[in-house]
Image (cartoon, rainbow, N blue to C red):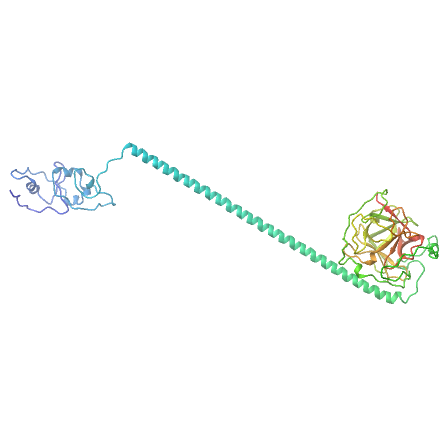
Length: 458
């Protein structure tokens, strides 16, 4: 039996029967038409169901169809449709007993698998936490390493800056020393030229004077020790040897002799300083470095110099004079070798040796020169540790016989002979002012006023 003709074709998009009671039906097709279409052959169609107010548009998509709509019996398969949201399976494919697109229904995993999944998740979380902690540790270490590198770089830059500043100061000090040395050399050369000029004008054409030294402005006293005590007329008296490469000493003030430029402190191998040896009176051997005072035996006064006194005329250099009878700070001198000589510190000094005497307080050397008076020659303190010439050289001799090659002892009376001129260091009881007794350089060294003796520190 053929189905009765349909008054209206089914609506497109998959229209479904409405629920048996209380559920919406398709309003676009009468219920009797669908019932007659679905009834089996030879049977009466079921009575019409109550109409609902729902429209077909309410079930345009299978995902919007309520589950109760599938209980009305077999219907034509709906058209294949894509899910409205996302790419997952549609609601239609998850309904049991229906055929549709998408994945099949999946059963929930068993409890053992759930626990394994949970353990895996915990392990993955622990690994992630460990990775984060390791990353934080690496970051902290890298930051500390960068900070250490920065600190070291700053310290290196600071050291480099300090080294540069130190070198700058050293170079500046070296430059100042060189300028000072050059200035002193220029002054020295100028003084030499002036000395030569004075000698040519004042000394060569003048007559020698045998009265008290005019350079100090003093006058001899009646009780002073004068030259009539000299033993120079004795044919057996000691005669010092001639200086090396020069004629014998004439002791004539007009016989002007000049220094050897090679015997100066310039380019000298002699050390600028020597250790100071402070000996007791029981140690009577004089050595290189010994600190001593020189007592004039005729008057009992000590050889002295200081910055507050200078010669009244002539070179206007620092004055050397005799004063007091007990050693004071300005009375000490140090025994040093001559320029270009290099003895070891503490070497024993023998008679006949050239030495220098450096004043402890002022650092100047016992000095004498021609040119500033006809007679006698001046004795001054001149130069310093870096400036010295042959006019600072003195030959120490034992009074009377010279004692050459024998040891210099503090108990002996000695003569200090100026090496260039051959004159002896002399003092007389002539007071330039209160407690300032004159010291000159004159004579052969055989006069009682030429005798000196060493005084050692206590």
